[in-house]
Amino acid sequence: MYKLFTVYYSQLRSVERQIREEPDPLIREDVLVCQSEREWTEDERLKMEKSALQTEYKIDDETIYSEFKTKTRKLEETEEELKNTKMELDSMSKSLQYKDNQIQKAQIQVKKMNEMLSEKKTQPKNTDKDLETSQNKLEEKDMLLREMKKELEKTKRILEENQKSMKDNNTKLENMVKELETSKNKLMKRDKQLQEKDRLLEEKTKQLQEQTDPESSAPIRRRNSMELEPQTMIGETQDSETPIRRKSSIEGDRPSLGGEFTPHSPVSVSVA
Image (tube, rainbow, N blue to C red; front, side, top):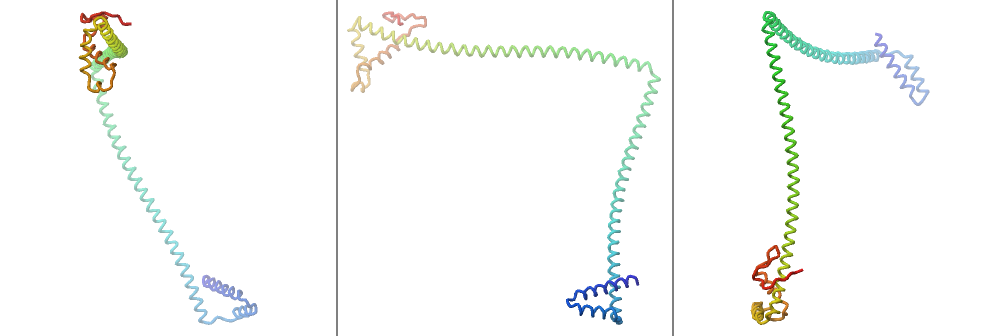
């Protein structure tokens, strides 16, 4: 009944608020007076009770639905926590099993070590002998290692010397190549000078032959002029005889590098 009265009172207050909002104040007062003084009919009372019950049921439904959602969310959270707890328990179980295996292995190793200690206690002489043998082997290996180290240092030193010698040889070889190039250039230059001297010598020789025996040189000049190409007969001067005389001089014997001439040269003339 408390909820019903509350709903009824709230609806009455809403009706009064609507009446107060009427534009005409006289009509608003009359309506308020009538509403407050008159009695509710049975139909209006039933409608008000029905409306109050519907409102109450609606509120209850919303409350129940909200509680249902809250409980559902809590249930999901609880299930997630249970799932995580189960995973943690599985992980802890595996870890405990692994540690149990490790403990068993450690116990087996301890047992073996105890057995070995028992054997060593029963055979102290053999143990001392084995230790001595091991010590001797270690000393031999240490000595061999020192010898190998010395040999390695020696090999390294020899390799460095060989590299240095190779570097010196390469430097010498480069210098020799440069000297050979220089000598080659000098020889080529000297060869050109000798060719030039040979040419000048041949010209001097021909000039001397012409001066000493002009009759014997005339047939030679006629024969050389007949061997010229037809174009020399058209407009060239007697200066074109110079290449022919140079050619005939080249066909002769060249002087040796020492400056001496062959017996075929009629006259020996020094050229500056």
